[in-house]
Length: 352
Ligand code: 5AD
Ligand code: FES
Image 1 (cartoon, rainbow, N blue to C red):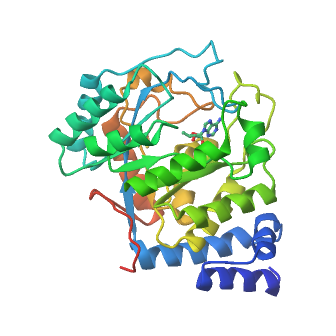
Image 2: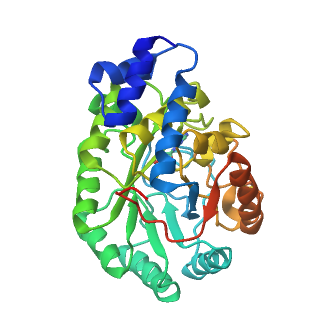
């Protein structure tokens, strides 16, 4: 690696920021060893903030109905081949109870934008979980809503919200979404969530169609403005029943590079090593941890519905019971040199 590149990485590791030109140089660099050097610096920093801890979040995919038509997503409204399902409040509570026994202290309720779940229904689900598991964090990931709705969920007991911005470049945003959706509203949602008091997660797909180094630079700058607690990234993975069926998936290498860059830019961040990363490579999630990730979000949904929550092709862990995933992950995380912890896992904005 050239001394210039090594210097840029060293600067990023110590200052947690770079100029646009320097960030672009890292995003586009083709020299050998860049990813290794970035991962090494990222791992060092994550150990300063989080030690060898890996937080687990139990993901409950409770509906795959969605009113939106995002061009990349397998459960888009326009995919008439998707087999739709919804979980009842009782089924969701059963997933939480099982998760609790397995050591989960955060439940992430994720779904498409499904109008069947009115605000009253969501609040009822959230407050029931809150009553049964007062020591747990409740995370929602149910898309764009009004500020009043977000406030109602918060008042019912939700503490965290995940909403990836997907891309911070308005033109790019318009190429990934139909005209009914806008980057402006997405950002409005994220800032409303923060103001209400949620711990917020945002993020984007790596290698989505029409993504460029410039759009990635806007993503990094937007995240610096938002200062989210969690940043979720994973490779874009082609789904055959979408308008992007002929577009290539994102790569392992570019995702790992961005994970390391994110760790160095946001030392405190909760960075999941995502299921999508585990889907494009058998050891993707382990590599993601070594590149700076510190969160894993295994599936707690009933096995019967898992295959149906198909955002992208060949998703892993769709046949495993929650307990099997828990055991499997324990071993994988340990092999990678880290340790799963079962506390609530709030963000740490200061050193250990
Ligand atoms: N490949 C990878 N990630 C995807 N998502 C949606 N569709 C895909 C896909 N085809 C991601 C989006 C969304 C999150 C829940 O899943 O970033 O925010
Ligand atoms: Fe699900 Fe390994 S994490 S089977």
